[in-house]
Image (cartoon, rainbow, N blue to C red; front, side):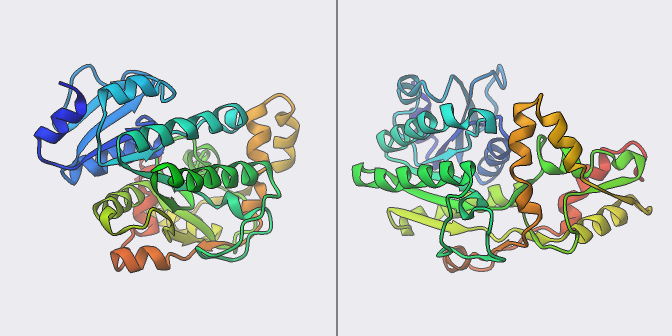
Length: 320
């Protein structure tokens, strides 16, 4: 019996999470499972040797669409949580996009895709609404815009797709928060990425994942292709610093991000060079407005900034 048959027998909606070991992927698996969905979690490396409750694991590459569709020929929702690192976007983003389109279309599923603010380019306005024009004036912006155009075009061949655009992730590892902002928290230092009075769009992963579930539950009310913004948490550098101080119960020093030093080191690190190109996001105030999402779901509740950041302080050996 394939995984989809098991899902159908369970008489519960089913979701295939592609990239289930990534930051959003892990959060999505947890959120959908908690909501009673039958979850098929795909990843290249093994997650668990045994199946657990309503979560089943599928070990294979996302580009192996034949194997995935043999295991999951029919599913209600596909979550595209596959995100190769910046240095491999040129070679992996297009084939990954084509693969998830094939999987979602063949399995007659709604494809759910996390969007980001890169599409708006280096001069992104302070308020980002669903109708804010894109600007392909960076490599990342051009790549994401091209990806979303490919998704929209695929609806002519039967794809149903919703893009949920969100800000920088809070949670997981490999983010600005754990790799830079709170990296020296144990030493009593918070790294400030830019001017600390500029609003910045953040997205707490458990909240975002639960919003994915809520949108999936309304899939019959969605058009064939839709883009919605998830407002998340808007916070300045001062806000983040103050929240970390309150959580740690002590005064923390502010240290500016050493961008010039990073540029020097970047000569030896392609990944660091790619990250430095995103510096503009810390030099432009921006927040996401989600009128379409609120129209679909009603009031969007979010965790407080303190609650979202609590895990970073708890990792610090000197925290209370």
